[in-house]
Image 1 (cartoon, rainbow, N blue to C red):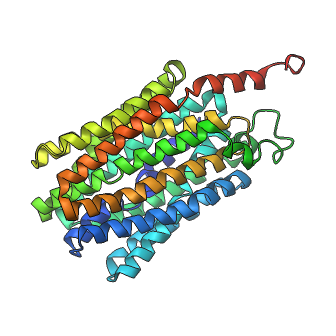
Image 2 (cartoon, helix red, strand yellow; image 1 turned 180 degrees about the vertical axis):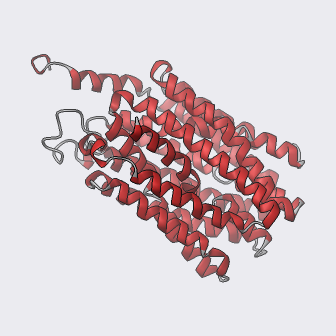
Image 3 (cartoon, helix red, strand yellow; image 1 turned 90 degrees about the vertical axis):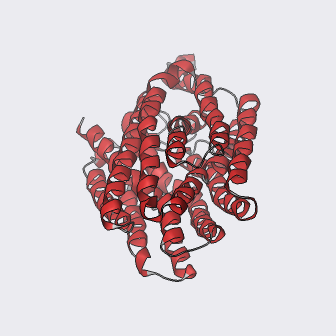
Length: 411
């Protein structure tokens, strides 16, 4: 129970550290540094590419390492340090360099938390616990976004940098209270019970590359993030252009609104994904994106934009909780869960990195409405791919568990 409470706290406090400055970076560079939208998109793309380059090696390292808590501590320190020094940098190269370091370090968070969760809880409790992880993650995002909005209104947008440092310190304290003996390192890498005697033997990387379901899922993740990643920064820029002094506070309102909706969505996945299946809920996440892209074009009113942003809570909430569960289904018993997780996160990182650059270019040459419609059309294509090309993975998970628990004579 103590270890689960520590895991709750880790997901709550690490929520915003995982994302770094995120959309706040776009507002800061637009309003305080007076950068063009395409330059802002380029910096965010560079940071995303750094995360992409580090993601698969990060997964492999987490598979091999028994010091998963130390990996989270080191990554949190790098992300926070790179963000806190940003206000003291003036050139494009320094800003891009700091965000490159932050992007590479942030690549370790998601697979490390998932590995610790699987190692502690095992496959039978994994879906429930991932839903709970995401619930606390979104609650933490909502809390810090609300706090950032109030503090930025009173002391200015740079306060976000220091709030991030405080959350990082609390996340480090949380992960250190998890008992390392409670983490089964063989199970944490996706091995079935009984396979820990030979942890290097099962499922070579070639087997993962030959998994059709994993390949289709990677492509779907690319499309989802290509459509989704730029939407919130674009909304933040529109709000900041309307009122520079309230841009950060309004961005916080957008984040809080979405994160509040994500909490019940993540809880829904944890409770129902093993009963309803993965596919219906994941399709619902995809369907929200084209709707958001269209609705953003109907009005520039700040209250309308914030209201539409709440729909992100449904899509991202369902996606975030499902992502790790589907990867675990596809790699059950392979011994390469975290490596596969890193590869899929790399795929979605490609989409996210390209999203901000694509959106920035469309805004410069065709305007914000054209950018939103472009992103929505991409999402519609992803919905169709997942509908017709991605199999249900729940049955695969049940078959793997049945084989693992069957008597030896019956196998």
